[in-house]
Length: 147
Image (cartoon, rainbow, N blue to C red; front, side, top):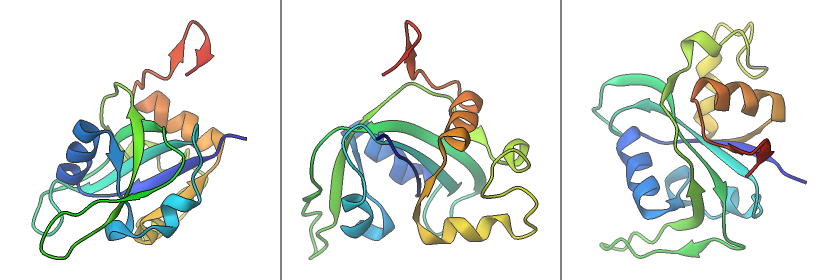
């Protein structure tokens, strides 16, 4: 059964993941990646352009499908060894969250809608995923079938 996930990362980190074909969540923790299975979909939400001092963008920035069976450790140097997971990203256009706030079940009617993103990674419904994918013009359909 396909599941749908939101991952939170700055746009510069998302861009690195898209180029490298991987996701890395919650500062490299393994646990969120273990909950995912091959074929699950991941949407990245980027609150800022850079992790600490970037401009606020509050946009969904990438979308892809989990491609491998298990997370793997990746040595980034200086003792930092985060876990990653292979992802096949699809072509999309970043989409600001503001027009979607009243359409997504996890933000609708919530004054403090951004609080849920503080988790770093969380599961969403298929309906929410489809709303986001449509807003992003994501290339997830081929000849009427989901990739």
